[in-house]
Image 1 (tube, rainbow, N blue to C red):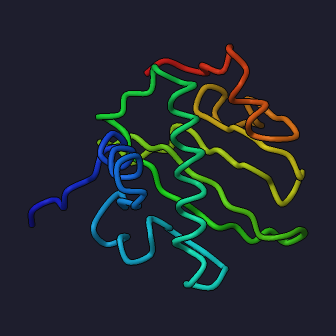
Image 2: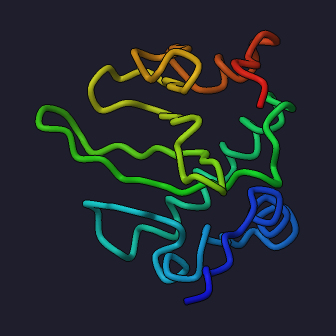
Length: 146
């Protein structure tokens, strides 16, 4: 059985930048605007995906060492046991599917923006701030070169 085309982060960002459209990481996720899992209404997914993709664009710009040809992004809507629903995006290795970064614009647990990653084995946030823009404006944002 042939492997399905795995979209690159470069392709996903180009589609967003040129047309403000979401290109899911694979064709199976296109109908849900790139969300892997969600607890919100289906009708909210497109709006949430566009908001998250704008943040992906900023995150990648702040981390030029991310290889956009070897990675892809997908979205997740989380439902913590205690706290409100919250969204995140995950940048993954195309070959292995391993998550490299999980970026949470506003965590339902802490109320803060958080960047988690492989650099510390996802053992706590690599960066945390009141807002994601505070993290992204830090010139020392590059967390790990791949």
